[in-house]
Each structure stands twice: as C-alpha cells, then as structure tokens.
Picture 1 (cartoon, rainbow, N blue to C red):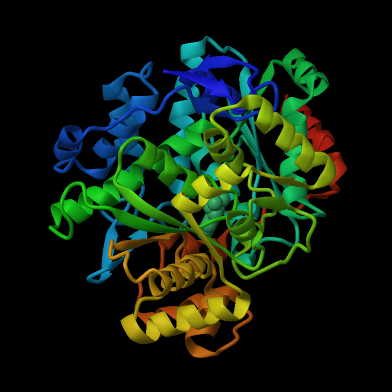
Picture 2 (cartoon, protein in one colour):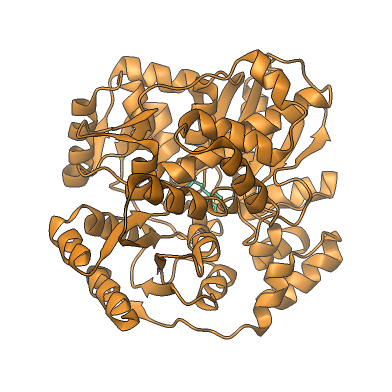
Length: 496
Ligand SMILES: *Cc1c(COP(=O)(O)O)cnc(C)c1O
C-alpha cells in the first residue's frame, strides 16, 4: 500500500510514511485507498485477542511489514497493559458502553499507539535502509509526551525530545514527564500554549536548513505526534475490537450500526474511527466532543474553521487545542482528495486564521459527525451525576464525551444504535478534579487526592501513578517558544 501527502507533494510506502512522520510539503500522509475488512474477516477476528486483532487491522495498511513479526510486536506492546485486555468494553446499560483505553503504562489512550510505535518506526527505518540516528520531536498537550517517552526510552538508535506548555498540563502530567527515566530522552517546558509548541515543532520538521544541519550530525527527524500515520493506525484497531466485543457478547448482530462518542483535541482518535468506518466497520454517527475550546463544534455546525478566538485552559488539558492537525486528513477525504484545495485552506488558516468549506462538504461532515462541547461546570456535573447513578468514575476528558453523547441521544431519539463512549484517561490521572466532582472536596496535593479518590470509588490505583511520588525530577528546563531548535541542538551536542 502506498501513501500520499494531503498537499499533493509525494507518494511513499507505509514504512517511509512512518519513518519520516510528515510529508516534505508539510502535508500529512494518508493511504492511497482504504483497505476493506469483509464481514467474513470480521467473523474470523471474533475469536482473536486484542493483539491479534490489532495486527490484522494494521497489516492492511502496512503490508511490507512481516505479519508474524507485527503480531509479536503487538503482543509485546499490549502485554504492558494492567488489565488482561488492552481495550476492555464495559457495559453501563443496554445501550451505553465505555471503551476503556487507559490501562497502559501512562494511563491514557495514547499508550494504545505509543507502546507499538517504537517497533513500527525502528522496523520502518530498517525497511527503508535509513542508517542515521532518529530524533523524535514531540509537542504535547500532556498525555502524548509521557506515553512517547515511555515507549521510546532506551530504544536503539532513537532519541526523543518532548515539548509541553509550561502552564498548560496537569500537575500529574508534568510530574510524569519531569521524572522520566532513560538515557536517550529530554523534556523541555515551553513558555506558551500547546498550539505554539505544535507549530514550532512543525516548523523544525519542514525547515530544510534544520534538516540539513541535523543530517550532517547523522540525525534524521521523525514525529510521534498523531500527524505520524504510525500513531493513527494502531488507533483504528480498537474501534474494530470494541465492535467485535459487542458482537461476541450478543449485544448486537454483525452488521448492526454502533455510534462512538470521542473526546477530541487534535482529531486523531476520532479520525481513526472514521478510517475504521471507511474500511467497512458499521459505524453510525461519530460524536465529536470538545471542551470549552469548542472550535470543532463550531466547525461541524457551520463549516467555518475560525481559530481567531480566546484559548481556554480547562480541566481537560489534553483537549485544549485550537489547531486540530488531523482534521486535515478528514478535509482531504471530504474535498474529494483534492490536494490543491487542502493546501489553499491550510495556507489560509496560517495567514488569516480562518477558512470555510463548501456547502456540499458541510453536508457531508454533518452526515458523519455530531459536534458538541462540554463546559467546565458541565464536566464536573457529568462526572458527579454519572458516579451517583452508576458508581463509575470517569476522568475529565471522558466526561466531555459522555456529556455530548447524552445530548445526542436526547436529541436523536430515533437513533437506537448502541453508544460507545471512548474513555481516554484514568480518573487517577486528574485526581483533584475528579475528586472535587465526586465529593466536593478540593484537595491540593495530587497523591492525597489519589488516596481519597481510591477510598471514595474503590477503583484500583494504577501502579505507574502511585510510584511517581518517589521518583526524582530530572528535567527542569523552561524555554521560549522561538528557542526550541536551540534546545534541540543542545540536546544533540551534549550527547556526543
Ligand atoms: C490526547 C487526548 C485526547 C484527545 O485526543 P485527540 O486524538 O488529540 O483528539 C482526549 N483525551 C485524553 C485523555 C487525551 O490524552
């Protein structure tokens, strides 16, 4: 299978797409066509475990990877998860389910892809004959950074550097990153917000001068952000797996539609659901849930993407994003795969801060997605009410999706398809906010909040979070947003 850039520039293999992360023209790599999964194949996948299902879906896109080896890599990646099943589906009632994606090493759904990406990238470089050392640059709104650091720590021939907004992540997220172990890792806080981190990193990726200078030092750049197809592909698998679990437990019949509600920031997770649908998975509506930064809600409702608005820091920081980079991949499909149109709009977004899509495109987006957002008070209320009713604690991001799903079901009473709410983080990753929502107690210390939350909910505390308390802080650098490349050079040169 070949991959093309959304901006028309180049055609590459899957291994190349993953090794390089982003196209030379600044576009994102997308599959030339969507591979399909037939009902017969789905029947066969029913008896597989999560790792086998994931390998089966991935191999559809990455056919130059050896299937048996891919399966082994998936088994190894998902064996790191605390539950036996990497993506368990929890039944709440006859029409509502939670897809728990937070049982990995860093307690957020980013682990679903980032436990596997080191293999995909290492192997991709080998397939392409890349001999240079790979430097991974990551911009993070909190969860990607830690998951990438854990995934890539001490990986052979790979270095990783993470940039996060200094004031824009939760205490627990900051501590997770600042205490990261490994000889090939570096973490830098940036005096700005996530969007600035993301554009600064993207700028380094697309600068010929930077790339040339690094190449002279024997280094090529790659990305562990969801702009990398290697991040996206493993995420497609859990939509299949959730559907198969519904079939194998007799909740639905093969072919019945299922709706998914996804808490959305960079549009990576929900885009994977759309890709699954394009591969033939019977998905009905996709509920795109935002927090107070509701740019996507407005876009789905009006067809106007306008980033000229206030940026809010919320209690769901991993969704505090105004430029959802993976939306470019959806736009490409909606625009009949016309790269000229995509290029024009992305340039317009960069210069004017706004673009508008055509009426028939708006129609198409609205037929696929329902957009809604959840404010701060609603987040707290949703966590509280849901816990009261079902004794099920959820994190602040998941609460946004639950809120949007509730609104959709109330509005669209004729749609009786089961709703699967995608749960993206452990409540223990945001213990103060969840504790406050459930009990009204405002506890300043994260670890105290974890303890009290455990008493209030009886939910098991993930080991990786309780262990954090005794770890030494290794990274304290804070840099200005226009100084990130200088930090990259410092890191590279210090390591020589
Ligand atoms: C990253 C993240 C999201 C948003 O996912 P996108 O793929 O960026 O849309 C939602 N919830 C949590 C907990 C996250 O870490």
